[in-house]
Length: 144
Image 1 (cartoon, helix red, strand yellow):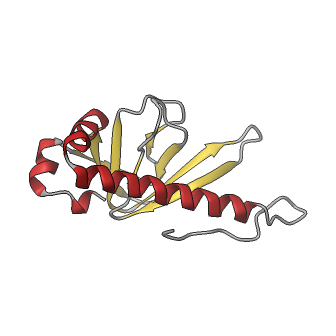
Image 2: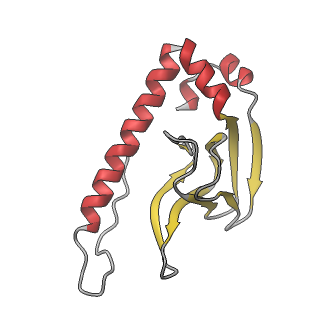
C-alpha cells in the first residue's frame, strides 16, 4: 500500500530501515504497536505461540506487503524474518496523521485492513479441514 503513497508523503513519515537475519524478531505479541512495517526485501511470518509450544501461523508477508497495523494499542502476533529481510518502519502516529488529511492514504489503509480480514476468514475456513492428527491438510496463501 505504501507504494501508492507519494514520495513526498513517505518523506514526511520519516521511515527508517531495519535489516534482520533469519529468525530475527521484528515485534512480539502483546508489545506496544508503535510502528507499521513494510517488507522491502525478504519474507516475514506472523504467528502466535501456543501453550504446547507449537506456532500458529497468522500470515506470511512478502516484498511490498504492509504489516503490523493494529486496531488496538498492542500487537496480536509475533513477527520474525523467514530469511534475511529488510523492513521499512513507519511511526504509527505519523501514518495516522497523514491518513486524517489524505483520503487516498485512508482508503488504501481501509483496503489493506479489509484484505487482511478476508485472508483471516479464508485461513479460518481452511483450519476447519483438519485431519485426525490435528494438522491442517491445506494452507491458504492468497491475496484475497
